Image (cartoon, rainbow, N blue to C red; front, top):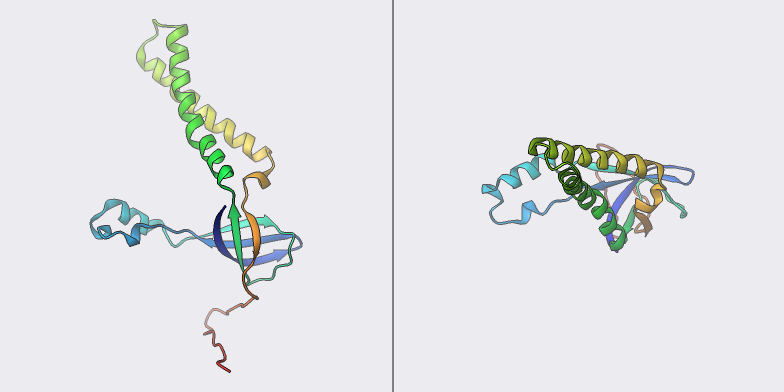
Length: 160
């Protein structure tokens, strides 16, 4: 199980909106100052992601929760998004090459890219129809009590 923490931002019935932070490892590398990938990563990081999930447990705004996603689910989703379109591109080119060998190579490549795009479109359409719960993280539990901090408030804990 791959785990991440998030903060409950809104609760409405059984629906909860949880904010998670996008993380990157580019800041920990010793050559990050001279790396182009690090510059791009710094430009697109620190943007929170808001997830809408169903919750069976009672949560309140400001609570920190632990989210999890099974590794098998992550591998399956990655294969759908990465491997299937590439296989459709290769399959489209090979199919045209086998059925119509006299067709120009540029046309074979064009058909391959069409199959590639069609695969992405069909995946998008199918995944929107399918139960989203299969591809959503699970709420594993709450880590603390709610502590909502106002915009300009400094949190203070009593030492006694």
